[in-house]
Length: 219
Ligand SMILES: *Cc1c(COP(=O)(O)O)cnc(C)c1O
Image 1 (cartoon, rainbow, N blue to C red):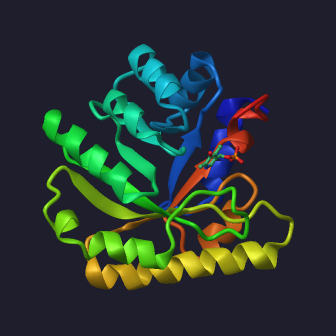
Image 2: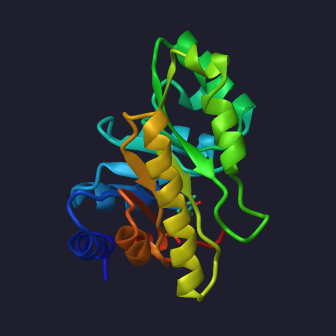
Image 3: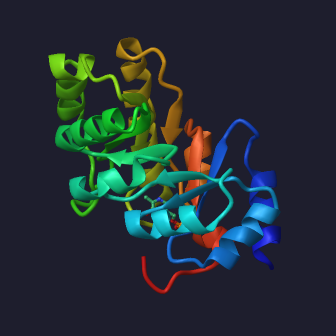
């Protein structure tokens, strides 16, 4: 099946209110354009340099989402154009995004990444760290970031019960966080292998790469 057809099939299979981020990391401009021509406008990348190159090369009405682990020294390159930063996993990183946002006179939409998987290899905050950030005076005074919600990645496993449990845990943190941050509306969870479970458990945004573009040689 072509990229366009796979994209259309996936769009049909997810509710309209769930936002699809087409994860185009490692894929060519031609592949992105094929999805673009089939109507897709939101793309996710996990490396700042690759995303910036694609932003320069491709149509300007594409919304670029940074979904990967971010180094603070790379933040400045994407702040002029990035639409949503999914992987904010430390206060230091959030402070850097705020600082660069101020320089560029932008308010940068961010998701805080929670650690929900069993694996230590995945990044993210625990609940204590989450509330340390949002209850701090410095957070209250940050004017150039906007927390739009949470993001998380489940354990890479065939055990659907475990994946479901992790998504349920993230959804519950999200609902609790709404008491402190009533404006949050985005729960980014679900990838090619687990987006159906994620949507059932309350995801509002799925990040799908290989099911649209085919497998990657590296990530
Ligand atoms: C690569 C990546 C995805 C997409 O993964 P697929 O399994 O190809 O759908 C989603 N989220 C993050 C954070 C990723 O790095």
